[in-house]
Image 1 (cartoon, rainbow, N blue to C red):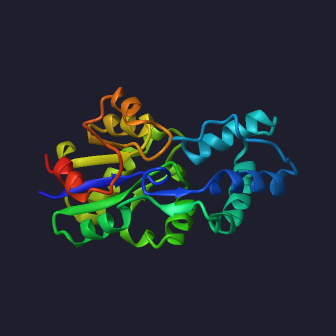
Image 2 (tube, rainbow, N blue to C red):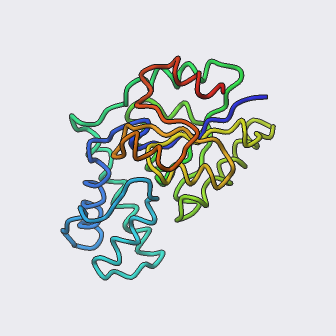
Amino acid sequence: MKLLLLWDIDGTLINSGGAGMRALRTGLKNAFGIDGSLEDIDFAGRTDRWIMRRIFAKFNLPATEENFSRFFDGYLTALPAELANPGARVLPGVGALLTAAAARGDVVQGLLTGNIRRGAEIKLGFHGLWRHFPFGAFADDGELRNDLGPHAVRRAREHAGMDFPAGRTWVIGDTPFDIECGRAIGARTLALATGSHSAAALAAHQPHAVLADLADATAFWRVIGE
């Protein structure tokens, strides 16, 4: 029976050095002529569509599908240039661990992220990581994080041609929303203190395990193999 690993992106696999927020601000300015701060909106663990809806509310813009499309286009156009900053990096241990997982015959891995699919591809492609993920669930599939898990599981089944029991499915992320998302589909959850939440804060939400980061591959596989 294979393991299914479903990965978050921001704060889990990479740190974009603030590229996402800057690209959103640029997209907002280019699409709607608004140059405003987004510092009061909590991005961590949310979906891109949820974030954009909050931006629309803040600046009194109609949350129409046309406006979502305009905003997404502006954001995606700005994102590649914003990723080329000194703070953008792959987090400790991630590259080697993803490569090792791909080489194993007992692991299938995909994405479970609040990014829209094209944004996820741009971010991970910038760091050479997109190739590790043949499927995933994205903000295109739903505005609420907890709605994304069933899409990821379905696509995993379609990709691998097999079912993955909840006990062999892991959702890996850096926020309480990732833990809740995993719990919503009955999966095991691994929380990483690589984002804006401490290990203690994450542990309070009762994931199956917490790690400081992925630098110790042995510790990761020990947890996943429990």
